[in-house]
Image 1 (cartoon, rainbow, N blue to C red):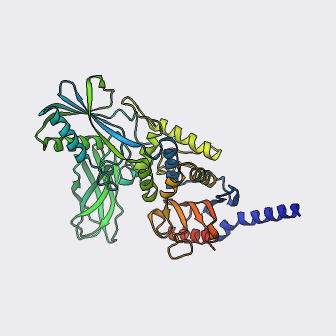
Image 2 (cartoon, helix red, strand yellow):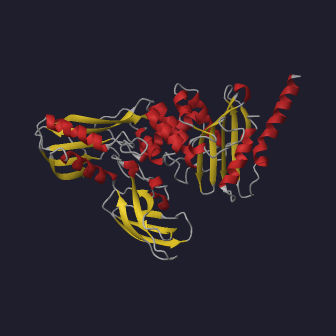
Amino acid sequence: MAFLDRYLIACLAFISATDVSSQLNLSNEATVASVVIDYQTGNVVEEHDADRLLTPASLTKLMTTAAALDVLGPKTKFETRAFLDLDNSSLIIKGFCDPTMGSSYYTWHSAEAFADQIATALANHNVTRLNTLCLDASYIAGPTITSKRLWEDMGNYFGASPEAFNIYDNTATLILSSPSTVNAPCSVVGMQPDCGISVNCHVHSYTKNADSVYVYGYGDTWYASGAMPANKKRFNVKAAMPNPASFFARLIRKQIEAHGITIGKIDITLSDVNYGKTQLIATSFSPSVESIIKTTNHESVNLFADAMMLHLATPDIATDATTSIDKGMSVLRRFVESASGSKPHLYDGSGLSPMNALSPRQIASVVLRTLKSQYGRQYENSLATAGISGTLRRLGKGTPIEGKVVGKSGSMTGVLGYAGIINGTNGHKYVFCIIVNHYNTSSSEVRQQIASWLANYIK
């Protein structure tokens, strides 16, 4: 009887392993891989090509946020520190890559408030004039943009990379104007905030209501190309802020000078600063890691994920601490390999690089281990709910999985994936991951088919 039971279980496992590919009616070019794991036992209850490495897109964030909880802890906050030299002539601000200052997700955490805090401290030291405002940006060594990122992503708001100083989600808005005629050149009429750069506009007008404008550039000269609706006097397109540190410095100086304290020159340095002859006068603290990972996973914020990847290399920040893409990625890769038992192909923390490659088994293994860790509650709370919230708001709305599946999506052109928790009948839980690459049907159709597959565990 025991042999027969094992035989039947093996047969059922084989049948279920083919279920997802037969249920998803996709073209022959599409690649599908999936896995479903029993939360309680850790046993695989269904899999299809679960070890195939595919482009995960933003499912990568589930790896980064899990590592951030494990390495940094949920209560950690990222700092920005202000120092005054002993002769009261120079203000030095050290940036430690707080990605949330001035963020639209955390309106209470503003650079203006930090500047007011600094101004109060300066007044307490009887300072009315500073010769220099120095921004120490040495925390991140080397480039801040991974070499595996697409050129067309770098200048757009979703491709904004974390720096030692970040402000307003490192995002600026181009204000474009289009003529009433179609296929005519458009123009840039403004930028908010004003980042002090020039933009060469190669955008033309067309009949559609939505735009297809992309911004390209890295440095002082940027380019906008694509198309936008005709007959628009002011049309907003979000772009990456080209030099957040420079804008941050100008904002801080303006706010401090509003308190009657004048500042001479601004200096931004990547070299080590001697803090032996300075005193700490103000510190700005970011929201906690727990809060940031909830926003990161719920809203899929690339900037936050890549910033946390950088912080993985410096869990205990000292004034002379430095990190880099290489250091942060090394920690992230080791974490994923330790949790899943196999090596990932990862090049950023957000999933924006199309060179990233993860398997459903790797992703589900990391998710399961983190859910069962001491930080499981914080991790689960960071996930969106199917049909209701975050990146899962369009998955399974009005179907049996609405409110029953929590997790995260990952998408880019030809890529759609989901991972998280299925809350099945009778309180039974499963951890799942499904990734589809190279499909040529609509994303909404693939999404509907995935929702139908997930519903098998709800019935």
